[in-house]
Amino acid sequence: MTLEEMRRKKSEGLSQKRRLLDKAGVTRALKSIAQKILERHADPKKLVLLGIRTGGVFLAGRLRDLLKSMTRIDIPCGAMDITLYRDDVFTGLSRPEVGPTELPGTVHGKSVILIDDVLFTGRTIRAALEEIMEFGRPHSIQLAVLVDRGHRELPIQADFVGLTVETQREQVVRVLYHELGEPDEVLLCERTKP
Amino acid sequence: MTAPFPHRHLLGIEPLSKEDLLAIMDLGDRMVEISERAIKRVPTLRGKTVLNFFSEASTRTRTSFEIAGKRLSADVINLSESGSSSEKGETLLDTARNLAAMKPDILVIRHSASGAPHFLARHLDCAVVNAGDGMHEHPTQALLDCATIRKHKGKFDGLTVSIIGDITHSRVARSDILALNKLGARVRVAGPRTLMPIGIESFGVEVFDRVEPALKGADVVMVLRLQKERMAAGLIPNPREYSRYFGINPRNIELAKPDAIVMHPGPINRGVEMEPEVADGKRSVILEQVTYGLAIRMAVLYLFAGPPPDEGIG
Image (tube, rainbow over all chains, first blue to last red; front, side):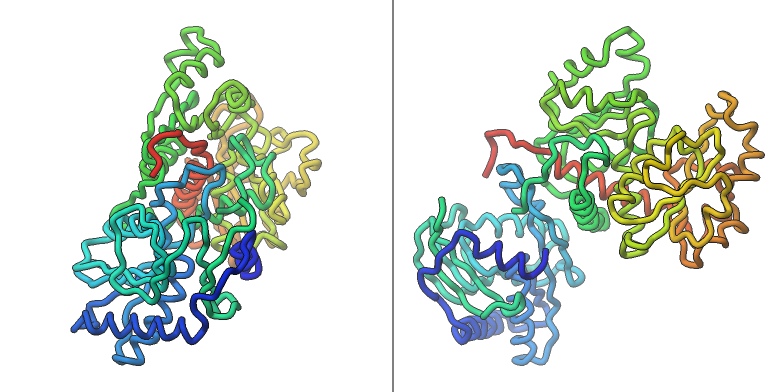
């Protein structure tokens, strides 16, 4: 899929209601997450960052850069595609696209920070936890998200949150990425068609 | 979610578009990684049943489908027809109805009769995957061949692929020709005239009755297996003569491009269609074909395993 197609698909059938974070807000949120991660982890060398495709991978890369500028340590950073672990693969007519999972070496004994853009039902995180466990036994797994929008369907909470926002179930939280040629921002949108 | 994959069954390459082929191959590329993990399994097809129904002996294709299903957590059941239903006089339709009553999600079928999978697809509720039907098609073989070629060459446009051997009786050749044409490669075929179908030019291939000109400048050399039955039928005099005129050896393979790859669907008759020095040589990608075979079959099972049961979601 080209970047243009990805952008178009993401905005299809949505109308913007309000901006939750602008570019400066996104940067502030990520800086605050990076600081909190360092406060909780005395030994950053044990850390591994794992971004969930697609948005989480961009955020993981930015967190890695922030953490490097704060500690001068290169923290291993990988990407996870949780499609094959989803609980709704066969609920629709189409099969979801599968992307590669690329782990930066072992997770065994590591302190894994799982990174996603929006925490919603918690089902993606459930799938990601199952996938990580298949690669080894991490010392711990913590969750960092840019936005927590509520409406959990599973007992899952984030350890590091950029922004907590109340939303309605049918609304959509869109995160835009400069990595996709978009302005860095987070929007709350309404669906224009059912 | 992508657009729905527009096919309920995988009956052949013929009904698929270039985009369909690329979608399956892309998914296959992703599946390779799962087999490299310490725990070689994902839970995707939990609760799905894959029935491998093979009426012709084929250890490796059946095993490949079986492992593919298991790596995706499906329940895989193998049934071989030989010595059972058909010999006892059961018709294919009766066999099929019995299989359907076992409620599989996917029926993988290998059958000596061309069109058997199409017949079953019309009469069964589950998805039907053709694992080779008579002299007709073998779509997963073509997909794995194309995936292997793409891995090495990165593209299909401008590639010359030479298929050498028994073109008439080869469902592998037919599916490969169809797939490679759709993907934009140039296809040459070479073999004895007794094993070359009349009108093969209409498939959009260049036809040679000698192997050397077909090899010249080729990017990919696909060597087909010579079946022993062809000698019994008097189509070729003997294996030694076949080998002399159509066998791929360390000398004639040099006519291909320096970076040409050599492929074979297996099992190889060493010393007949291919010399051991070529099969084990630096150009050979035969074992990679096996790796991609598994990955492509995982991709196919994933794509065709729907529709879902109503219960047990979430």
